[in-house]
Length: 236
Image 1 (cartoon, rainbow, N blue to C red):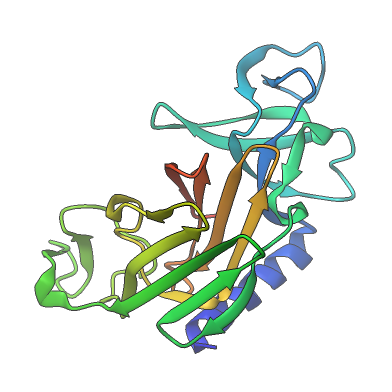
Image 2: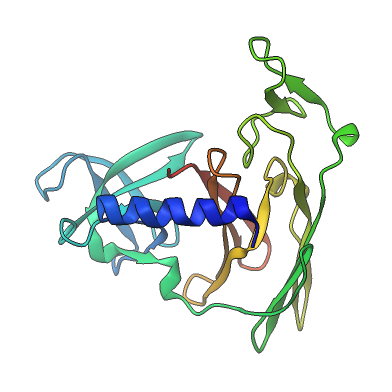
């Protein structure tokens, strides 16, 4: 395991212990097919939004405090929204069965179950293949890569990036579009999990990346074997 990722894991563990909170992605799951998102932890509080089953949220769960209500956050129309829902309306992704890691090196990993395999390939970050923009104030600090915000490094040059993620099934093959893999750097398979949600016909690729201060959490979702989305947050 890389030293930077070990530091990130230790940071998360210390954070969880100090604040008795556990970070997680979750999936909306309600018998009515949707859940009301409220402004405060009360059934009488104002409804600020509605989320349908299968939608992705993230949260910090505090066992001693979160008995009936859960504070969730999610992205809608490119804006982050935070609200309250009944705690049993959210299923942690870790509750779903996971694909097992079968083979891996520093730049390749294969996850499988009886019907599906996912191959993940990494590659070295080659700076000359990208447009690097440095901060005007701090000349040695990277501000943007390819004109966009990036994740995994706190102003330093990335070391690795995704090359490809491929889903293989008996009946089809799906390459994750590059737009869902770009700008994600410092990836380590030691902080990687893939879960299968049969009810919502979804696969969740969850991983933590980054070098401590540049740490991030990401969830790539494959729904109905063809619809791909990604969720990125910095929960530290």
